[in-house]
Image (cartoon, rainbow, N blue to C red):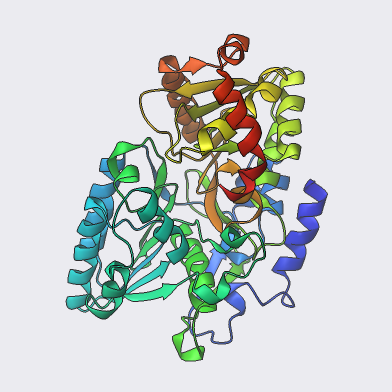
Length: 433
């Protein structure tokens, strides 16, 4: 698995592989040197870091100031403050931009920034937002997003126009599930939080605020899709990231931005998690709202547990998508009987997409542990190589599961015939959820 990733990373980093790398865009008026901090990562983890370095945007960097955000209200305050402070540009790529209370607050704020003369660029997934409005009972086709472009002046590009819904039986593979904000090239965000009431208050969710060299890595990732959606060269924004030969300077965690999706030659998040499970010596803790894993991932979890690794999974008791709950449950038996411990949070919906291992390795991003997210959707996240960050998140995870209910054989025995029927009938449709 790791050798396969390393070969792909070498190909992606070569000048010949220019179709999907921001640094290989035709216009190169903006060049940024990136100091490679791979040498500062613990030796046993450097192979993983190299395997995830698909392009200059995913080179590990150091000297970043990062804040891990686990409170949606705090994220809302920080993001609004950074948006208000913007002077050069605001760039936003998010799966859901709700037409709910929080979404309207940000819609108004972005409109105000445009009136101040600050360009606002927003990569919009209209397929995901359409169904989000339908599922939540809000009006749709009411011009909410059209008015962002026409009335508010936001430079909005549809990631999933109707002409792209042509993926056979899998139209959801065209969905852009990434959640990135970049402000003035000085501060950026990435993680699991959308711009909606759920992420910004009601749910348990996790996001990252970062300043430092990783900001341009996230901007390069944003521009990868932004430039792909441009109708011509004049609509592209050049950004040429170039690996520096100098020794990396700065202190703090090593921070690696990386993407997943149809534009990547490997299933990066799944491969990274499998590598983590196969190489962990003490524990791997995973938090996800949707647990509909691939077979190879289930096997990796069971292999790790069989070696004595403490593999734990935190999921919500009830999903925001009703059909997803029995599908989540349908994967429990194989994992629990294979030694994996599963805990259900009963007081609120868990939307975090996190895994942490051995007090050193930490992933925070947009990828759910489900088949469509791992194999089809456009995703983005960060790997953090840092004892302090990983230890804090692991401690938070263990504190969270104190109020959860562990899944056991008694749980399976207590399932009603209706529950078992729903699991059987809906599990084959996991790829569409």
